[in-house]
Amino acid sequence: MKVIQIINSLNTGGAEKLLLDTIPLYRKEGIEMDVLVFWNNNHQFINALKALNCCRVIVLKESDNYKDIYNPLNILKLRKFLKNYDIAHVHLFPAQYYTVIANLLIGGKCKLIFTEHNTTNRRIQKSYFKVIETFVYARYKKIVCISEEIHNIYKQYIPKHLRKFNVINNGVNLNAILNAKPFQNKMDINSNIKNTNSIILQVSAFRAQKDQKTLIRALGLLPKKFILLLVGEGETRKECELLVSELLLADRVFFLGQRMDIPQLLRTADIVVLSSKYEGMSLSSIEGMASGKPFIASDVPGLSDIVRGAGVLFEEGNSQELAQNISRLIEDSSLYKEIVRSCQERAELFNIDRMISNHITLYKEVYET
Image 1: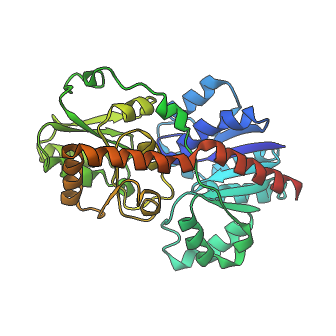
Image 2: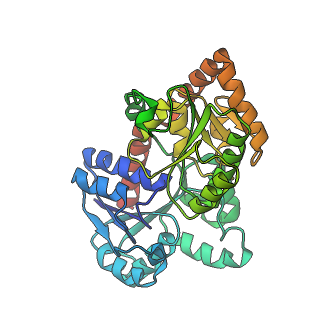
């Protein structure tokens, strides 16, 4: 059984990071697995995967233009590789559509699985996409929903394909976080950070969905001892940098870009936050809860179910409530410790080994049909 993972790129993102973390583990379990990306611009995740030398990494286009992801020529390039594999496990749009077309061009020789990572997207919100979406989903043998919430949404959206749906929660390598050692000095992250500073950390791509602006505004309501670390890259970073400048927070907000030392940063932070407008089942939220630090998230689809009863939830976009929650945790050491304990217990439910086992069972089922 030969499996290929297909995704737009291995730039910053939860689905992208998941492939970096899991492909070596699938290989360890005896699954012959490679990865194909439509586009690469010297991304750290793909460089890290290549350095592991555990699989073939196929890149359809090396360039500095992310729009190459959408180039229809990717379909023709993809079909040349697709025919060499028994199963293609696909992630995100447009890979979702292009893989279906490429497979049709080779007579449907490859069996397709698609993972639905988000509770919403632009297509599901537009009725005229329904016919196209129904056609596309019909070409997949199985559709993996990474949470029950996503499953409930899509079984209403495309009820015709209910039998294809499987719920497999994303997983996190909890040991990598628990065993990570914090920076000995906070100034090792940036020379302008003091050991007396309280560090707030958010790890997420810069997209409108992630809403870093709410967190930046919350920082402006907090005492000067609080500083904010923002890890990631993306199209809204410049907007966030402008907001930081407008609010005179340039000496308190640090844009760290894409990092490979996330576990160490998590262990060094005082509070971990995710201020998204929606999620699928956020790996960052699970990593945040596993970190040994309190985790705060917006009360939105894809985060509410995971965090409620463990971490702290705040109203989406409400920077004042977010700031109040941060202050309360820092000032109340008993509450701080209780939230840490409950977060770590919740994170245990999302161990990466469970996810790997469930996926391998699914691959075998699809392969044998």
